[in-house]
Length: 179
Image 1 (cartoon, rainbow, N blue to C red):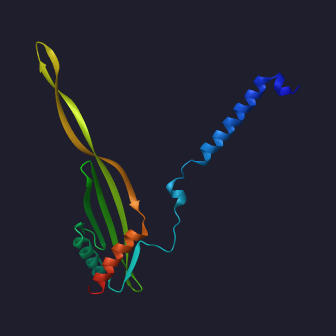
Image 2 (cartoon, rainbow, N blue to C red):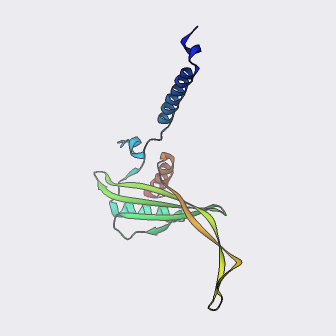
Image 3 (tube, one colour):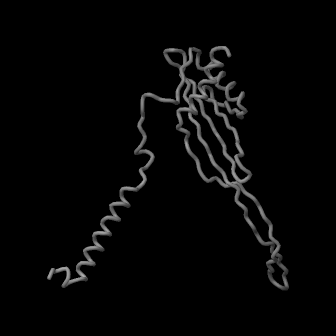
């Protein structure tokens, strides 16, 4: 006769400890890494474009590129262009795409750096009840509902897709070459 047959409770405890250990290891392996842990700081960057023009002229081309695509432009700081465009993918959702472009001098003329941020919003309905206060009776809450729809920010993310920046810089390149 085995020891486990004589002590079924001991066998159950060992099984429970084993299952708990496996589940803890599994939980630890699925833990999401933090964003800064995956940042590579690669010298090969999709976020830059080189122009033979001086920085002011390069920023003027950037401004024209964004305006040609329907972006609202804010260029209050010299050498920096900010553009914003709103999208409505569905009646309940809205997106804002913000692009910041900086034109700096380089040995070739200038380098243009781009960074885009997508902010997502969802429509949320808020219902409230109307209330009436009468001095002699106190306050009374009436069941008349007032619905208010509000856009609520649900997420924000820096766009890292090289294809997004490739399309943007292709347009700038076309304008830079006199197109």
